[in-house]
Image (tube, rainbow, N blue to C red; front, side, top):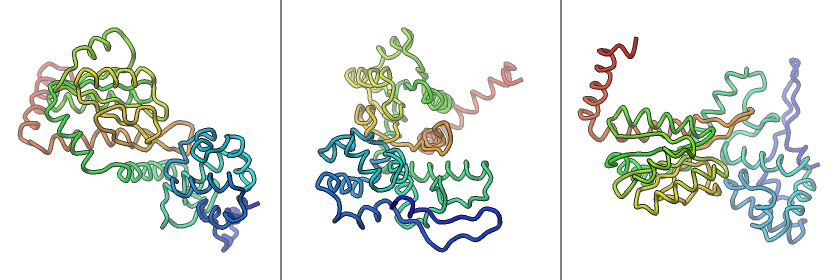
Length: 303
């Protein structure tokens, strides 16, 4: 099978690493391209040309891109030797994450890590890759536009449900420290709807959601935009239902090799926005932060 040939032979018990090196998915598709059927060629071409998207497309969505069916996509993945489409999808995603110049993948989770590494090292290296991916997904122009909007906002409402709630709470914390009125909305309660209803031109709503995103987050982003507020979207990929629902979209990678998504990328992106706002007038924001902390000490809140 072609897929099996992508993996190097490993001897864990003190043996040697085989000299064979696994190939990338894009190389695999190019090599077999002439032998593919017409529909398979369409799917292969889309994967090669849009590697950054394939890791987030369902079999049905990829089939639509190639003008074919989801069953054809699944059979195509299996014809390449993958157990199913998810394995092809993961391999494509990891190739894009590692980049064209990365060293070959050497073991099953395909992150290029030495197999003897402990889980602590592997987990933190995965997060490091997420940060690199977050940097590559954003332009300085879009980032600076978001910073300008936040620095000049009369008030900020940050919306994030489920796992995105953690990022929303962090955003509320850092912007409040800077003296920017900011609240986190982590549910579809009446109080959050009331906060949304008060947003207008000059205000900012930060909508945070990943993959398909929560319907409440999407709805609040659309309503805030209709009211004239600036809407900054933070999501993980351009195919998210939240992408494009605001004035501008920033991307944060959430991939992980474990059971839950990594939030290192989105939390760091929020911190970068706050740091950029702070850098615009350090004296002003230093005085605001100092005032908050002095009051906290005087009141005994920090004891």
